Image 1 (cartoon, rainbow, N blue to C red):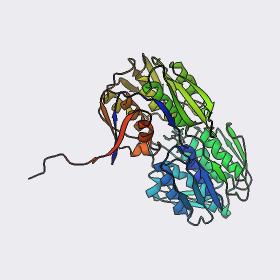
Image 2 (tube, rainbow, N blue to C red):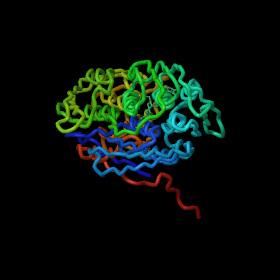
Image 3 (cartoon, helix red, strand yellow):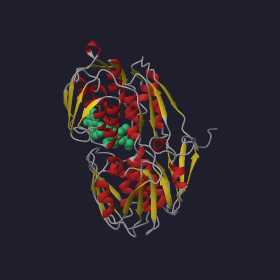
Image 4 (cartoon, rainbow, N blue to C red):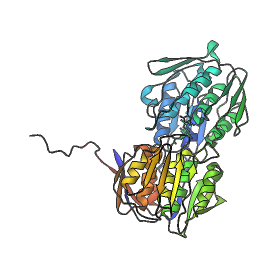
Length: 449
Ligand code: EPZ
């Protein structure tokens, strides 16, 4: 098993590159299953979740080739040949590793008219239901039953029928899953209270390029006219907005006050409205320029002398992303006062808090809110801490960057799900960080005589 070892106190300097979006790459791969041809996807990040989902597609009969180069700053392409999707199943041993494998329910129902998909696992926190996914498929006429932990779905007569469904609450995954099933259903589908995250909009744009008839992308209501077939396309994945937000926070916390830090390969409007506004209220600032050579943007952060406390409440896009909640909390431990971070989307996504407090921070969880008592920069001591989920892991790395002494972040397999070569990128930007193997369960007890 791997850990990341960080020597605190080295300022973040220079430039870092944002890779392709994990939470968009996965639905794009699912969309490729709908086309009986060869799809090429560009700017696909080298992540465990992408690797896992490639294997899910292979089980269904797709051929997936993906040969990323060693340089994370050059976009990598994936080729998916879905000419023969002849095994409409997604097995437990893969789905348990990654919740988004559940997208195969909509993709296989749409392509094959039937699906057997294991109920998902995924991150460690809280119950993460899929009731909206199931009810949405039923609204399209799918017959659904649970069989030994699998969802078994059938479209009567082999093809779903357009229908009407309202998501409550807003759900990124359920919106994507039901759209996958609806684009080749017979007739019109109206989906209300849909997610408008960039992940959903870019995924919808790929479906449109494939020939899907979709109106209302990015609004609260999406209307789909079902088509008989979809064509394979070549398509660019968008930059990862959560990686961008993470590096902006890292710069504000760990950059030299007054210095600037450049983040390339970005797309700033995907941050929504709440995050940029809160970020500037801390005293940090940033500017956006188009890349000189490339389709994306350069975000240049100006590191503030001091960080002002700014309370936030997470919300669906364009609100403050729940996936930046843990990272924001760490930044607030460096602020000149108290702030409150409330998560309205996941009410118990706070497993990083006990680990941060072991590093000397003063955070207390009350219901779905964490109260952070900041005393300005510093006050964090390096120690050994345990990752529990993807965004908790990266928040511990951020804390290690500003800690006194060494921080060992264990179980970085969580981190590898969503951050490509984080230690490589950060060490090129001045941080003393390296990956080391370790034995998690090596017994240090004296051997029994
Ligand atoms: C996606 O998860 C992201 N994952 C998550 O990012 C992200 O935190 C989340 O959206 C919210 O933005 C991927 O895109 C792969 P939801 P998803 O359905 O789709 C409730 C990361 O760190 N709900 O939008 O699973 C649910 O409990 C990951 O990259 C139901 O009640 O999230 C939650 O309270 C973590 N019934 C709310 O909706 C359902 O059937 C939003 O969840 C589905 C969801």
